[in-house]
Length: 183
Image (tube, rainbow, N blue to C red; front, top):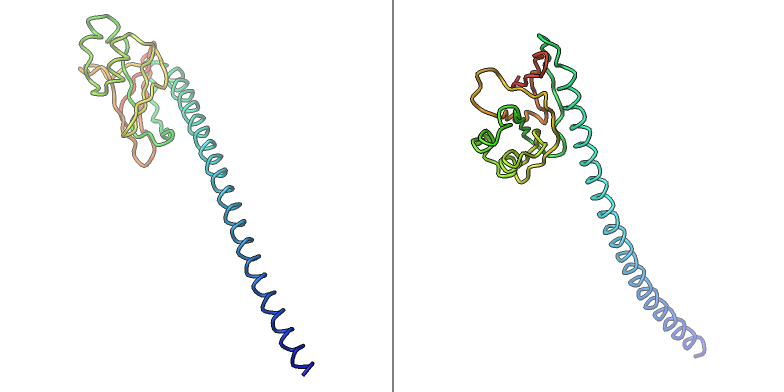
């Protein structure tokens, strides 16, 4: 009889331990979910900050490179075909010939770009004539007095769309400026 009671007592204790272990496991799983969630939220924030800073660095590098290219290739008669990687998600670059819109009447007649930011910038006489665009935003990126568009061109700006994430352009030296055209 004693043996039977000991056996029942032992089974009862084992059932209690198993229930306790299950409750402990649930607690461990809940804590793991909370920790993983916190890491995911913090990680997402950190990654988005890194991507934003990366995009800002790309734009700054692009601005420097484009301005240096325009200055570098002013030598009369030089023709240089250049490929530039488009910064971030931008798919269009626009160059405005500021010499053709330097007078108030020229600024008021400016209408080659349908983009409101570019039009307002030119009409206000802002010192910006290089812009990049994506489908949902336009960013003024730089300025160069050395930009010239093709002779006989009736437009006052040049729009270059990216192909495979790159801008393809030809820079022709005119001596005192650089003529930019689509490659």
